[in-house]
Length: 362
Image (cartoon, rainbow, N blue to C red; front, top):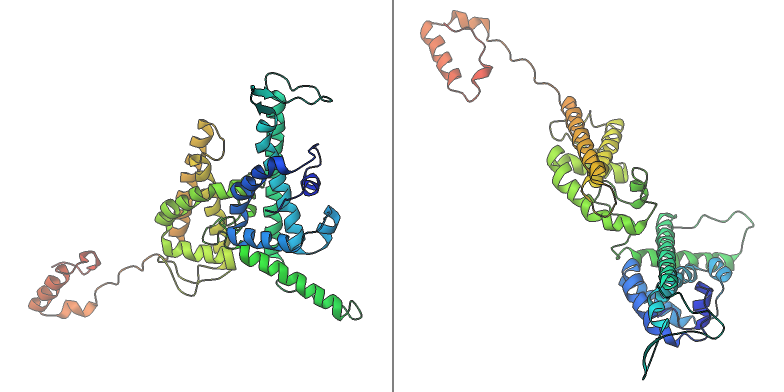
């Protein structure tokens, strides 16, 4: 567990009057395993618990923010668990069970909650909302660490010392360890095999309120659209080239799908990436149940996606060079003996492509 004292719970969520953590330890443990562990991934979660056990100190938000990556990760993770656990526990905290039966718990210096339960529901909803907001902040922070430079910038002349350089190296090692462990989680921010690989990219085409959780929930629909619709329309070989370009800026070294490599330039591939992403987003709106749209919006989005995909295929056809006009038969064939001309005619008509024959018939 990463929350074991009432001070840590109060640091993450100060708006409670609990005197002891003993009454909600089970809820905290459930929150860590049900709500937090799969987002971090089991390897990173286990490493965080191990680091916490070895660094039992009273922490403040300022100290956690200024000292080390593990401290910062712990603070964000504790906030997720605290709000989720309090939301889970409120139902049982509001009820007192004894030999006389079940009773509503009432404190002497606080009024009783309303009979219709709205106060309890409001508290639970607020905790759930804050837990997901904290989780999105945690995932955004991990994503930012993944995008940072793998090595620190060199110090300017006269700046720092050997000790500061050693501390900086240890700090970078912490970040790289966290990133390496998080890559084993299904919530790792980059789905590199997709044309829309991250929440940041999807957000630029569709407003999902920058929610990393929602993006993960949309991944099955995005994979279905890419593999069953896009790939069948433009071909898997060309789709791989487009994805490689979108991810790494890699240009193809050979022709594909009848399109010469000279046509697959950077501007052309940029245009294809943009158009295909718009197609995927339109079809996503039309088929997913994660995003809430009415039936008319879904039908319109589906129709727009089909039309845009047709425009993409027409654009690809325009990149394929037209076949050269068939060459006319040589004039000397007119000078051949009649038998030779009939033999040539017979051989041409017996080929698989009789349309290529253009010599005048006798």
